[in-house]
Length: 196
Length: 253
Image (tube, rainbow over all chains, first blue to last red; front, side, top):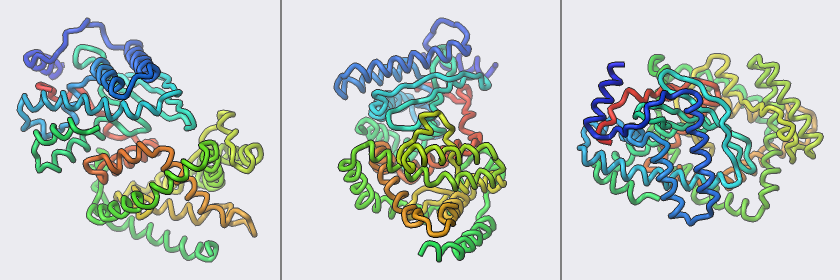
């Protein structure tokens, strides 16, 4: 409780908390968020726009439905302790575009498929929304989202595809990019902007 | 040829199982938190480079050609065929795990797909919503209490663990179908598996390419993804499922 208040205060000073309506997160609102997310992704895939326009749309979706500051902070891991505020902001920006391009190109495989919410349960202070993905010519597989109201809004902060989760995968990736540049965070950010 | 090799190899494999359980063990506390145990990282990375070369110059182009020439429905059919051949072995593994229901499901699938799916080319069992019933000897070892062991990358196979590597070899040489006298399956099992893998490599080409060729460290990324997925298949609670969003300072991001 105190930690949460402390973090919220800290966030407020950093100016990063978006003051949203303070309804309580529950099973309904958690699965509702994922349903809206799925509907938005399907809309973009079905729009038949060009690749560049689709990635821009995915970036907006990622911004609207996910806890971007948390995902970016987790992906940077311990290196975040020595990063300056300017580096953190630059990283957040580059990271959002990178995620949109990386996962957006995967979403193309969803064309003609569908994602169904099958269940939701509370785990500690967050909610786990289970889905099943039905893609053409593949056996159905499990996709799980973790949703919290940490930031003051209901947002997902992690996604699991058959047990493989976004946070750990991206922490491994960003960590490897920092290592490749001998620990240089700025060069990693520059790399991230280049990556398709 | 394979029949001749079978018995000494089983002995060899069981021997290695005992050996691997004797060397390189992970601290139980680290195991509980789901940490990665990779004491052979140096060797594994060399094998990874070898596997990448194999993929880049042989497997990837072959699979591209395969899925370009063979129509998608036939690629799926050949995949079904290989999957169906593994069902009797799945049934035996379920029995060894004490899972009678799973064994029945695997045999049921095998019967339905062999009879109604033209020898296993079709997959009517999935249309009937029958359970997947997929397992392996690595899972049997897990049920018997064997730990994951060390992470290993196998030449030609890719990511695995010492436990699952033993499972792969035992499964390959103990398919009950090949115990039958004068059966036609014997010479078809290995080619069917290779064709199935070609189809998978071709169908999921972009996803696999992105891991192997676009990651900053494809070895670390492959290891991460394999272990998470394997633990998920075995129904193990991964510590990463407990990542608490309230326990990280996100100020500045």
